[in-house]
Length: 511
Image (cartoon, rainbow, N blue to C red):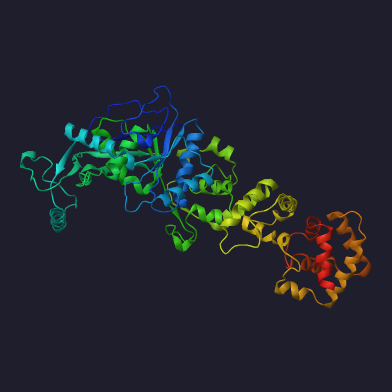
């Protein structure tokens, strides 16, 4: 379904303008408006994070919603880094955001846009608003503004600052004060946001103050920069968090002051933790990179995130192809979604079981350098060891819910003889168990075809001949081969280790 909402302010006109953009080329260096393709009607959306840290899981969901909406309709998904706050922004955070999006496999069109680099363009629009009479210079000091608000509070009035410079003659301006530039917002009527998620939201204009669009140091503010950039980039739909809803009302006044077409909006709800409180550090991982480090697959995280607030009937497991076909903004609910780590883990287990063995090995190897505390597995895995991992994967992935569990299950392949054994394995290897291993070593030596099937047949025959239960025979084998009481199926372990290594590990326990 195509979005069709409008934002209205009865006191200002909004002349329609052509909005679509054909191509973003080297946008960081461009100071003026961008060339628009007047023939396309496909949506153009954007993800615009602030580089103050990592890519938050909530931001990742917003990016995913935008990506699905654009890609599913042949539109464009643009990326803008809102880096105007120079004190809080840093290059490492930008790199983390780009890295997180790439890992999630959310590709964007053109280059990532630096908002800070477009400061001249933002200031030019502020000058144009001043020339139109839609903005004015305000010379009030912070202390004057605070005093005015305190007086309004004492009189029981809304604490909206009403600048005396809004209609004052500029000739009265002091020469020793650097002014800010304020938008001359509408005083009467209402600003109505017909939001695709939140519905009809009404903001009385008397509650919207004349926001500052350029600071006294000449730097444009966030609200001005966002509007100018969204206009110049040809954004047709703005999909972002509900915490920006009030900003939308304020930014609408800038659109209308410039006689620009207002884009459509969809403000998505926040993500809460299992306890219903806003997702925070105390709930666990917040950054996309954290989920990668915990061994989740990008396809699983995408599937889970899109279901936090959006649904397609009772479908839980939805392929990316189906998401591209089914996803629509109007299907997002208004209520905050609760993050359920158990559901994510179960979903990840499904995708692990249905991923190719070769892909899982590739992802496993890529993850090794990120494992906190390290691992006994060497990140520089040669071709022979990679082949063993691929062979071991079918049995290992049936039980694993994360790549970390796969890595843990694969440790036996990398153990050097004599392999270390945990406490449970040592307990298993009593005198009777070692006698069983000695008998099996003799029988395995005579096996002509070293396969999991042939080896299982040999163990079953021994079990029947001795009257020992199969588990009683298999457990000592597992302890000897892997050093653990729990491992992938023991006959698969024998097969993957091979004749020489398997017999040597068994011999280490009986000699």
